[in-house]
Image (cartoon, rainbow, N blue to C red; front, top):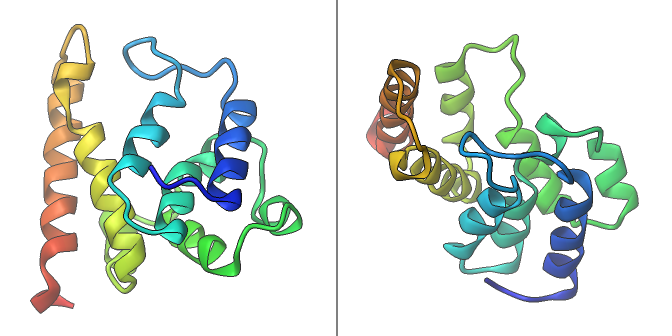
Length: 146
């Protein structure tokens, strides 16, 4: 984890914004963005990793993030990482692939979300989701197919 004023602000925000939320295993949701951020090597991607689900899963908006003083580069990445349900999932993944920083965060996110050891009772739905995420990771890693 990288600790700067911006990443510490993001950490504080995720604890507030995701308060009471749990993951599929019942653990506090913030464990996920913290894990994703651990593999980032710079302030911008670390902050984006911490905040990657905030707009999608809470009441926080992009405008709120800008008002809080998060860097425009972070918000640009978050806009790419926030899936609009009207956009088919693989089309969304293709859009991410245009930005190397967004790709880095999304790959870490997908890897963590594909870790079935996090889930107490794996279902067919979980297996199907991991299959979809594997396809997404392959798409993100396929730079020749851009």
